[in-house]
Amino acid sequence: MIKMRQDCTFLFLTKRIDRFMSCIPNDWKNGYDNVVVCCTIENQKNADYKLSIFKDLPIKHKCITVQPLLEKIDIEKYLDEIELVVVGGESDINARPLDYDWVLNIREQCVRKNVHFEFRQCGTYFIKDGKQYKLQTKDLIRQAKLASINYKL
Image 1 (spheres, rainbow, N blue to C red):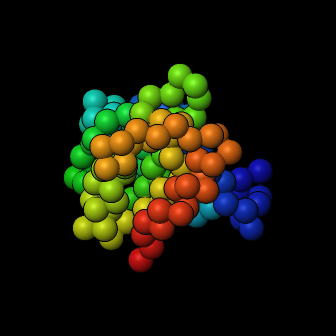
Image 2 (cartoon, helix red, strand yellow):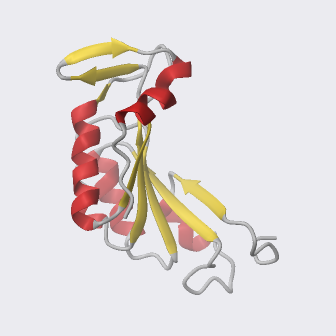
């Protein structure tokens, strides 16, 4: 279906990038033009493990999703050949807090490497300027958009 529908872009998000090579079709080579593969991470430990694998995989269009972002992380050394980084927090009564400074830090890494950056959603518990806010789920995407920090080349 993916090869037949070249008019569509297919997005695959995975938390198990280490299984990628065992899941691709025989004719994959370096990927299909209409497929974006997105590796999801949430903390430094997972970033170092997963992105060290992801960087060497034969994929034409790569994206990193840092959602939920659970701590300050450094991914700059993994941003070569990445087209987009998406960042967001958790939404739930039991959500872990998202610190806006962590979001801005990843944005700056993307700016330095000329990688598109999108702040997708705040977290239910959102920390800005040292103060924690509790946001309603319906407002998480809107609040992130209001921050107006997305970066496009």
